[in-house]
Amino acid sequence: MKKLLSLALASAMVLSLAACGGGNPGGSTPGNPTGSGSAAGDKVVKIGVFEPQSGDNGSGGKQEILGMQYANQKTPTVEIGGETYTVELVYADNQSSNDKAPSAAQTLVAGGVSIVLGSYGSGVSMAASDTFKEAGIAAMGVTCTNPNVTAGNDHYFRICFLDNFQAQVLANFAQDKFQAKTAYCLGETGNEYDQGLIAFFEQVFTANGGKVIKDSFPNNNSDFNSYLNKAKAEGADVIFTPVSIAYATQIITQAQSLGITAPFLGSDTLDDNMVLDAANGTDIQLYVSTFYQEGGAPDFDAGIKEYINSNSSAKDANGGNDTIAAVTAMVYDGSKTVTALGFQFAPVGSLPDVDTDAKPERPSKPGDDVDPDTCKHNWEETKRTDATCTLPGTVTSTCTKCEKTKTETLPKVGHTWEVKQTTQTSYDENGNVLTQGFTIYRCSVCGEEYKDTDGTGPPASPSTPSDPDDPGEEDGWLAKLLQKLGDFLGSTVGALLKLLGSILDGILDGLISLVTGVLDRLSQLVDLFGSFGEALGVLWTWLPTEVMTVLVAGVTIFVLLALLRLFLK
Image (cartoon, rainbow, N blue to C red; front, side, top):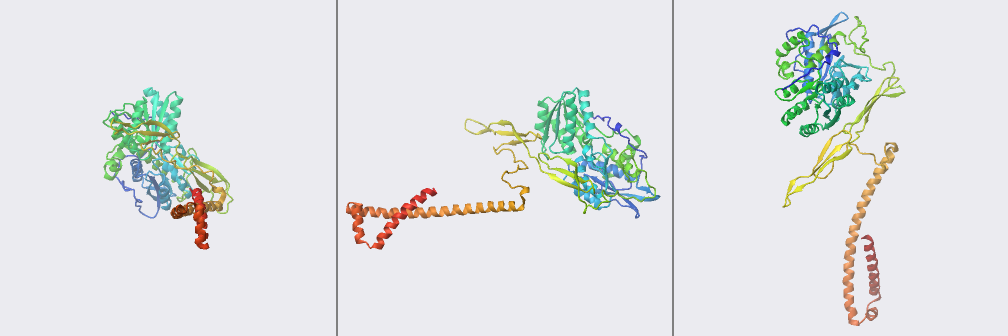
């Protein structure tokens, strides 16, 4: 049986869902977010749509886009200064990737947008933030709930609640509803959204006397059986998984096959049609926080359902049904807010007066009154994202004079592996392997695990500690060059000496064999004369002086070569 709880989170917000009645679909084309919507006339205001249309969060991104397109269909124009401007949506797919988010943001900047809406996913929003800031473009997050999206950023706004708020609600709900004493928390390694929510949840849950067990799975993981079995074995009363849509559907499906009975708690991401469909018809109990519960605004519900059902592309973007996603409602409200403000922004509580004679302009860039190229910068750190075991961090500094920014990368810290479990290989009476042994390593920092079955140990840390012999950055290029030259010459000379040694060794072996043969012949000659002295006396008088000199030299060389060979060995 599926249970869905719409927690009362939306009560903390004022949703302007006016003029939401039905109507024929029009405006921007739903389900065609690959380019700019058409606009009649030459007076156009462009709104950037910064959303994932692919990747782990592609489903949620499409539902947010659906709300924007519906709002654009309801309000296709805006009056500014007594003139009518057509509102045009310009799309950029950030692909649910922090790495690709900045280039998607740059596409919108190049497209001349006046403001940006998005993104679904806090990580991509933070990754693209500086691109919008440097371009002087304001951005409004609709459902990106991580506090760091807007912290210290005067150009980034949001209309949704924060992660610390929904984590507090979910933690209190778990203890009030289920009297939960133990909570199992599972998130993706290095994912700021997942790990941030888990940290907030743990803080509240433990403060109320509960126990939290945490695990992290690697990127692109598809087998969650070991994690779910651990939650079951540890006697978890609830399982908190604030993960992406793609991961959530797999976790729910695998939990059903394992017979997991503990209720699942999910953040706003899990309030998605695909996740709810995975839980529908099963015994899984799923409770999620949400921005909007269908039925909260009947006129809006009727209008958006008519819009979805009248367009196959819109219905496909919504997962093939007309269930209203909370993110669709949220972004509709956000789009209406953007239009109502005439693309002028200020912090909540101090909205500016709109100049009715002004033409729509993007905000002026910070530091326009000071030339950044000639400014003697005074840098101050304004934003920091700490590095994790697998992901680099960043430090953004801003000049207090011209407000120019620079971003530096912090290296990955690398895993700190500890042995968690070791199982020996077992054999039958004939020596055949029955059970392959293995060692499980666990990172004491992030909780990631690695199973080693061949005895090679865990993978090397992504960042290598500095070598004490390394001259380092501070020693300059000359020291580095000399060290590299020394390393090269050392390896080259060593190889040449080794080759020379092999050649000399072969020559010495040949000479020793030759001298040994000569001595054997001399010993036979000595036997004829009775003693070495008598033989030498006869030879000395019989053989020419030159030959005797060669023989004496040969014996001397033989002794020296023997000593040299012993030294080289």
